[in-house]
Image (cartoon, rainbow, N blue to C red; front, side, top):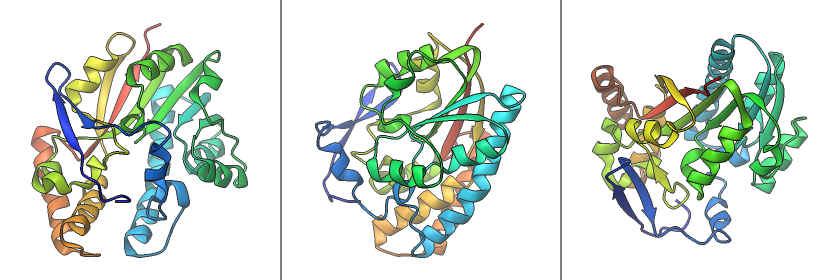
Length: 267
């Protein structure tokens, strides 16, 4: 979206995982986020896609907090990794949660602070703390040091606590339909591309996978972006059809465009 560069996806058969290749040096990665179109860092509401994103985002925030409450059976301490501009934590705070967050992007962190949400820039700041719940909403795919991060998350989530991860699913119908134009590949910002089996295999040493839930709206938003990348169309009814078709097929396969993984740390 930003650079126009091309990247390969390398398949790891043992994990059923795709990895972006090459991965830019860590010091270069921030440059790929420098765009007003990267909504989670800017709160941009200009344009039809951004307007639709905002409507769905507000609905999704309430649903996410409701899910967290259900899994934890009440409010406690919550750490949101990749908190963006802090809207999820602000919603959780309204429901009585003691909130903590991590956001490495300086501009997003500043916007969160303007909303009264205090964030740290690194996950390591919480390594000696124990949280009831840790969430990563479309964040894990961005993290270069995957295995090290999983180890750190295991230290932070308290025994009996919950880890919630939402990531795109490259086995969805919309991913297969759009191929190299599928917006959720989002290379090189997305380094990892997960399947259901890859998540279970990566986390099984530390967590038990208890449930997988769909993010229904993602198929529509991702299809709209994918159609834009493929045809330069700012709005496409075809994209809504592909989103519908993806969700319909996933009723049988459970391969939705994006999935939420609910994991528990054994007591």
